[in-house]
Length: 359
Image (tube, rainbow, N blue to C red; front, side, top):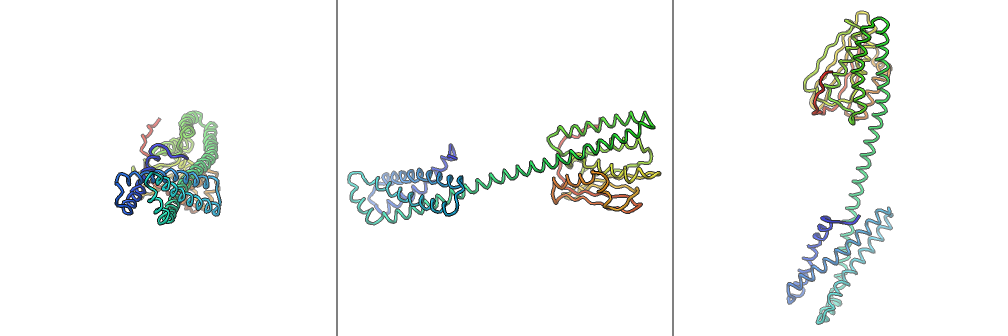
């Protein structure tokens, strides 16, 4: 990847210290040399070194692009550093070909050429090390970006697969409720269909939306519509208590997180009881954690039985695990005759979006 524009200007500017050191060395060795000539010699040497440095950069890039082995890289880089040193020596010799410089050339060849060669080989080696480090960092950044993109696509694919599993489950059970109403309450079935249309709009909005998360406030509106539909079927047997802190309403939550848990509580804990039961929905923020509870005081049973009743609970748990990893915790406590309590703890991330008005 060639350097362009500002990067190329910064590259040549980085050689200014080399020009200054070269100029200073000339003035120390030959106090009689004019300062202007020393400055010119320093700039010329730095320009030559910079141009050869671009060749070193190309060699480093080729070595990384070709995925050369350690031995091949070491050989190529050593040879390149030696060639850099030889090139700088030849550049200095070429600069001493002007008339009257024969004495300077003899002194250079006799006393300084070896030292100059070795010092420039060292400079070439340092330049190669710098470019190798920069190339390694660039490739690591690219790999991290690709890995993050692949992880993002994987997570999105898993979430889409889980959503695809959950939505039909929800729609089937809701239609089953409406079918039960049709058989005994035509007017109630009509109201249920209107509620169902509201629920369908939410599900379709989720399909069209780019993001899968909504504020808790929006998810609660959806759950209330679902509960209203169930109350058409259960009547006074279903009592609902909400304990929602205002601070929790703007926290982000994946769509259709609460509804499957509410459905489980109603279908398996409350509906089987002739006298009905109470459904409790609670939400609060504890520090950096959003804490949610879905509880009922219905039939109850073994805690492990919750996971075996439909796909709702297990899919919710998987979706939260995919999105938040170990930061998401889903727990169940239960006892026969004492109902179920499902708790969710996820990071409290505020979504500053406009709240939807009830339809």
